[in-house]
Image: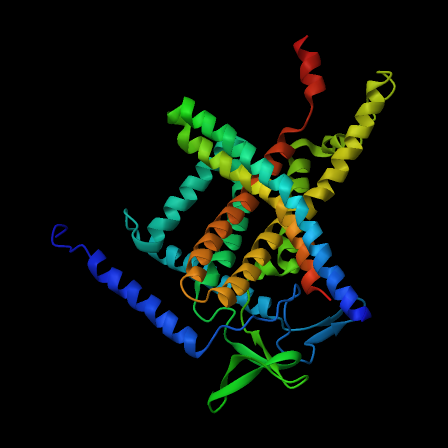
Length: 78
Length: 328
């Protein structure tokens, strides 16, 4: 019984930890928004903007990935 | 010569279709098994290699073997390039041409960020880290990676089926308690081991400090311990001290963010592949694999790029105050 409660708490905790991915999603959306605006206004800067956009996405994604790591640690590290 | 080359798309299409059908048929015989997922690298042997007094036991883990494979690949590429260059051909072909293109593009990028003076010093670190992480991430493409290994007894294992003498496969039926086996693969992507990412992050941040000292000498420390303006400016001097301390903390935060960015991305990909492989065994894993390759590329680029940018920042110093004073 106690083991079951611990198991359930693990899953709930992992789910709660993933709420943090919200921030990563907003960040990625905002950086793509900015880059798309820039590309629409100045199509010549496409390549440069794309590289920097992907860099920025990687950064904001990293924040969401930390949440994922916490969730994985709860689930798989015993 | 060029015009004789046939458009081979018509053949490749059927090969891909054949592979998809083969995959579907194969899955119905040997359904994929959800691998045993653990964050630490799996040990290949029960007995430790050697033990150190304080640190503990050292096991031959499966990320270590794939690190050796990565090194062999990189050294092989380097040797091939060197041999081709020694022949003195003006137009390099094959892998040499690709490497020349890559090195030139990376060097130009470094020069654009750091300036011509420091590019020679910073470029080797940037390119080495990028190449190592890139090969380590793309090496997952090899067949048999994370799927061929040793069977181990486990509490929550699966039943095995003997194929020929000495070779067995895990089948997708739960064994009785304490009788099952799990697979410990020979090779596992290195970036799913925290030791690999942490050591790369430590090397990177340590060399950032070294390059900072080489560029500015002892004045580099002023970035962290800024007491010069403490008494000359009433409130802002105190603020400068606190900002310096924050810089010091952020240097450690950089190590942690380097470590967990790479580890998290690659480990998430590993788990995603395992889960998708069990849920939708046909065709879907290929799409996820493609996405994982993209992520691996991006992470290698980001790791190298960030190292380069931090090194470039360290060479410049913050010294806004003096320049500002000189301008007036």
